[in-house]
Length: 349
Image (cartoon, rainbow, N blue to C red; front, side):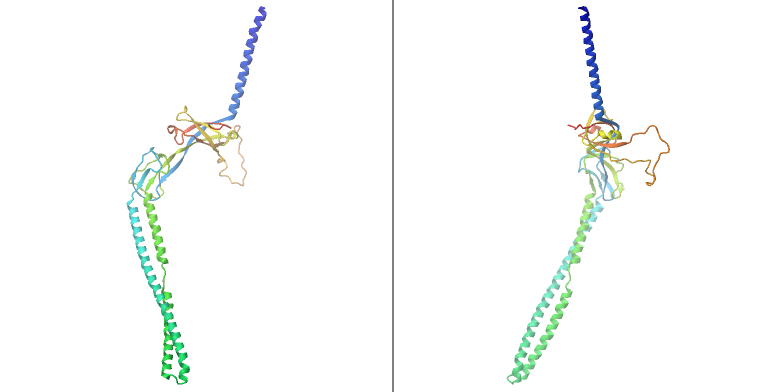
């Protein structure tokens, strides 16, 4: 009985050991599986879109409404170019347009007068044609009567003279109608001038409006090194606006890990500013290629062979972009170092 009682604790301890070993093996297998499903990189940085702020017009800076590292909202004023020369250009363009419209009105009145002359010449031609036809009918009626002595020859002579006068009047009216028709001008040149002046005025007003530069996005001002009074040229970048509504992390992943990464995978990002706070993100894209500096200067027609072989070959890294989901502003700094962990096949909640 005592021997049997002694064997029972031994069997119990053996069962406990077996369970512990099996649990350890299971936990190890689970950890290996999780490690196989997750890749990480400590070669990562925080990234955001940037806009180089410049004015499309040149001139003297009259006011700067922001300071270095200040946050701005889209539409807020950033700086202003002295608007006085631009306003004078608008005034000049308005005067040029008024002059062009006045010239066009004068041309249109002249064209109207010329067209009225053509209309009058046409009416005179019709009247001359009617008078000629009447004179011709009179001569045709009187000629047989004069031959028979029913009317005096003098009356026939007067009718023939009237016919010749009517022919002369018709030729003169026709010549005047042709001359009046050739003299009629157009207002095409005046209309083209007005359109050109309207376009010039539009450009002048656009330049005046562009003198006040506003923020195109929500963001933070960086690289501001100018002050009011400085003269700038068009498109000269004065500072940079870091867009704050879309942040991402760019992790350089080893080429051997790319097969474990897909677009849409859930990623965890730790900013080195505060590693205690985990940032959630989604894989947005995987870099399609990187520059091979060893071959950039070589002719493409020649094969490249290294002079010596190294025992250790460093794996190439490709950039993987992770779009961050509502990260806190306190951790977002362009170019800040980060650590990225990506779990393959896991979608972010």
